[in-house]
Image 1 (cartoon, one colour):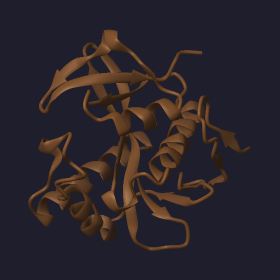
Image 2 (cartoon, rainbow, N blue to C red; image 1 turned 90 degrees about the vertical axis):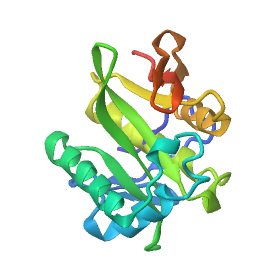
Image 3 (tube, one colour; image 1 turned 180 degrees about the vertical axis):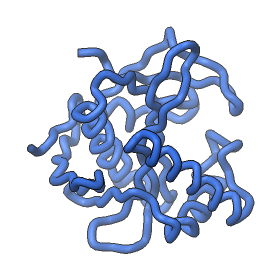
Image 4 (cartoon, helix red, strand yellow; image 1 turned 180 degrees about the horizontal axis):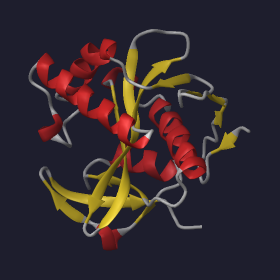
Amino acid sequence: MPWLGPGTTQRRILLSVRRDEDMTTERLSLLRPTRADVDAIFSINSDQRACVHNPSDRLATRDEALQLFRRWDEHWLRFGFGYWVVRDRGLDAPIGFCGIKVMRLGEREVVNLFYRFDPAVWGSGLATEAVSAVTGWAAENIPDRALIARIRPQNVASQRVAIHAGLARAEHLDTISEDGIDWIFARPRR
């Protein structure tokens, strides 16, 4: 059944989810990462512009990208979900990553929404489309898990993406992390 993102201003239809949890939207394919994606993981995560709000995430070597891929793959194996590689439908080159990861926020286990895209596609609505697909998948498949996004106060574009995907500001959950203050956005409870 098609999913229409709650609270989105640009309601993108999730066209399909295959059994292995790869997804397609109107303009995108979201695929589980493979070892073949390590170069793209390195390219995007070593770009200073892409990591400006989270400098500790910036990669310096391809080996770091390989280690990051292995952590993503281990998460998929353990939980059955994780980060997806995002591509323009029908094209091979990844344009970003979007997904969810189990983590602790204070004393509570949550799933953290993550998205990072090649700066060349910023402003095109593709992050919002991917994030809406992922939050829709989470609402359907893991509705009892608290879904959050940790966003820097200065990262207004990322805040807009989270809001368009149906998350709301949850100031009472704000925290400090390695790169500074994290504003928390959360999926409202139904």
